[in-house]
Image (cartoon, rainbow, N blue to C red):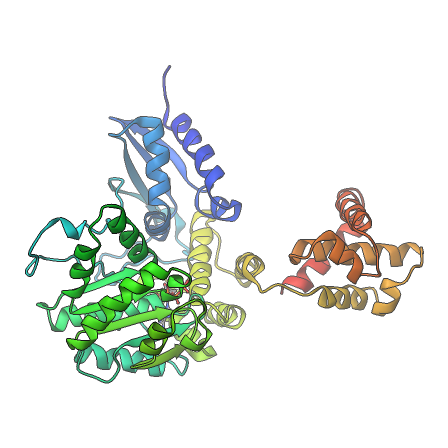
Length: 475
Ligand SMILES: Nc1ncnc2c1ncn2[C@@H]1O[C@H](COP(=O)(O)OP(=O)(O)OP(=O)(O)O)[C@@H](O)[C@H]1O
């Protein structure tokens, strides 16, 4: 059978679609076109350099698996990046979006072999007497101080990080524990400290490791009966950065081994940097002796960035990517994504990708759509009370009326809508939704959800109610 680029890619897509969220699939895979298949290399066209970088950063593994399934172990992937208006100067990467000069569009080929971006930590324990063994630091040079923007939310942690980087093991910030919520820069700052130390003290052995990987290595060492080698390996490190130590929770063996490593490093004036999604007092199932050590140095919190910092982060990202965006859109993004810098960055990249591929200007409307996607999928759970309030306000009735036993059609519909949105936006069970919305049983809630689904496809006016309410609940 003759295989074409399209048929191979279609099979890859089917596999990928099964394995990632539909939102991610829509954003990152639907816009790709397969263009060529030659010498076991599949060429795919992606809308922009950001797209290519994003795919490489986040989906290279799944791409590799999908392609290997189709074309075997020698499969290669070639990205063809569609760019417009690339200036031949030294700006980081200049892609002018939106471009009024789309006819200048050109194709640029970038041949990128499928590769695994995050190499496995080489098994360090096989080499005996390892004093001078060269240890890969596993640091990501893209996470540095220069692009870790300072604001009130991170000043203490950033300054402490800089102090530690200037004098590893020589400040009272040992360990330095950086904690804070999701996507606020803990990993970035951890790497930045390591990268800076490596720049200033190239001879020092620096190692970045996630708590998860540390745990896996420990388990493996027990299985292979070389627990002591494992401990010795970690004890020769000068600067140890362990990310997400809350994951040690409940793992007694790992905690014990980490305790020995920590003590040894600390006693020998080596630097330990830890990150966690919570403060030591809030950590559960972590031994007291470890918790008390975590508090020996400095615990510095990363908070939600304020508006000015969010704007600065967006502008810096745009500058580094060589993209221009109207000020009002930057403000819109900064005003609407407040609690997670990763989401903020994701929205920017998504916006650029959509605009670039669909050849659309970056407008507020486009920004609003993208932000809705981001915020909708990640927003904290809305409560059933809040949903009832929004629905009854919308239909200009009070919550008691919405919950009443009446069979008046418009009240029944309002109640059904409240149930439908409670099912959609909360994790509550049908029974619990029913009991909170007018003491109904789970079958009534199920019926309500079905009715809302049916009516929204057959009744235009009703569909409008659903859309309006959806907007109100997700903005
Ligand atoms: N102050 C900052 N300046 C610029 N970029 C930042 C800043 N803080 C965070 N970021 C960016 O936000 C993204 C998320 O940061 P990071 O992965 O370090 O967060 P995290 O706190 O480790 O998240 P998680 O809790 O999911 O592990 C990264 O791309 C990072 O570069």
